[in-house]
Amino acid sequence: MKRLRWPRWLPIDPYILLLLGTVGLAALLPARGTGADVASGASTAAIALLFFLYGARLSTREALDGLRHWRLHVTVLACTFVVFPLLGLAARGLVPVFLTHSLWTGLLFLTLVPSTIQSSIAFTSIARGNVPAAICAGSFSSLAGIVITPLLAASLLGGSAGGFTTDSIVKIVLQLLVPFLAGQLLRRWIGGFVTRHRKGLGLVDRGSILLVVYTAFSEGMVQGVWHQVSPARLGGLLAVEAVLLAVMLALTWYGAKALGFNRADRITIQFAGSKKSLASGLPMASVLFGAEASLAVLPLMLFHQMQLMVCAVIAKRRSHDPVEPLTARASAAASRTAVGTGSRSR
Image (tube, rainbow, N blue to C red; front, top):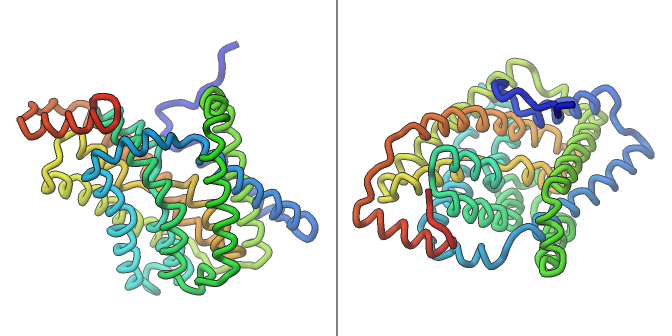
């Protein structure tokens, strides 16, 4: 029998459908009482497992080698943790006309999370960009996000994210940073196993995120936070996110050109600098927002699907672009990239 595959022509990520199904399950059958305690404990363990696996996967040597192409990585990090948050703060002016304060809080949190790794690499490859640089850029962003995202959320969101309390700092350290560092320390012994079983462990990743989503939305249902959202507000949120994505795609593409990057590097900067990670953002929101996490992650879930659909179209169109001839400057930049990543860009 042939293995069933998701139709490539269908524009919706199948994992998004699983997430929506999990939200529906939480709406119909939210965890209550003892069940809620069990789900909360399992969710905490799942978050720790996620960041342990992140640490075990990240090659420290490759990350350090990639620092040689520092201009590209600094540009991506600036887009992810400076430009995005500034746009999120500017969106405060849309409250209450387009957004409620809770939805704006979720939108601002969306702008604080790190970039994606897998989809940035995939789209960069399709568009014939600098794939090795995309790998390093995504890894740097995820690594920096473990520290930067909670700090930005605590400082910019204030009480909405718990603030700089001792309890919030302890949660961040124990649930995010300690498991990640443990994965890095044990990578020497388990790195080969993680690499060989990447596909199976990927299912563990996604299953853990589904558990986190179920727990967060169950708490939201019990607390009644979903009564704050109307269809009109959701439509306003989608419109704001569409503008946000369009602005970042334009800034990363034309800004990289103004900074003198060649075509391959511009593609990497555009895809790595304009996207946000659902896999990293959901667990972080669960730790930072508690019972309010369901509304906090809604903008991120919608933005994730939107960025996949739009970037898939852009990557396909870029793949048909004529390859620009290498000037002396571009050739030198490509050589530095190859040295910094261990392979040539394509």
